[in-house]
Amino acid sequence: MPTKQSVYIFDVDGVLNNLEIYQPDRRVLGQIAALLDAEVFVAINTGRGYDWVHNNVVQPLQRALRTPESATRLFAAVEMGGLGVEFVHGIERRIPSAFSLSQQQIALVRHIFDQHPGYSNKIHWYEKESMATIDKNSDTTLDAFRPIQKKLTTILQEAFKGQHVKVANSNDAIDVQAPEAGKWAGAQLIYEWLRRATNIQHDHFVCFGDSIVDYEMARFFAEQSHDTVFVCTGPVFFEQSSLHPGVELLKAQSPYNEGTYQYLRAHPTPTSFE
Image 1 (cartoon, one colour):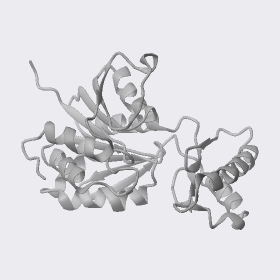
Image 2 (cartoon, rainbow, N blue to C red):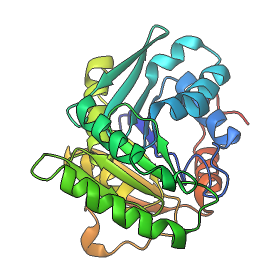
Image 3 (spheres, helix red, strand yellow):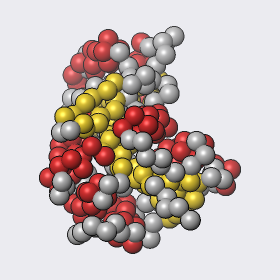
Image 4 (cartoon, rainbow, N blue to C red):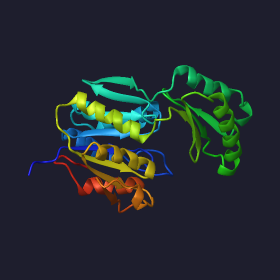
């Protein structure tokens, strides 16, 4: 039976790190570097801004690689698929996607944010290139954040009324993005990258996520008729109706980064290391 050509795709929050210390687990990054050095293609799929991903994921991975050229097998789909980043012979290429807002739209969100300086002790602007995010400060309680979130969401929805823009609330942020943006969009960028970056016929996709939102990237690859595994690292309950028959769902034995590390340790590459 032919060997499956695998691609590994990782969410960040709740997968590379836990939800208390928002820094990637160095052991997990070591395992990912080992995958890259073993000629496995790897992608990051996250809503985080690329500057953060570059400083906290990409650079540590590059330092951990045994062969710098291994970085050509790394791709980052960031900002909910609004921006793709690839590495060609040591050169970083940032590629805005069809899921990106215009700079004028992002500037409008920033203008509205700047019009409310009284909230600056509770929220902050999260710099991104292809979408706009207003984040809760780490020391702001959810009870204090919710009224601000509700008010700014109403203002933003009115400002973008009739435009092809989505204002979305998460637990600790307001995101303004293209309606199609999300983990599905990020998966599309990853798939397009694989087709232009290599002639290897990948047929096995291993996706790591901690929520039903992350499951959508696994659904994307399954709908392209590929053998797909979703490793769930979070305490998520999946209803049977939400599952795709082509996705194998695996629950990590431990939560978050620890579960990711255990899975990668249990499925080592020839060059895996601590």
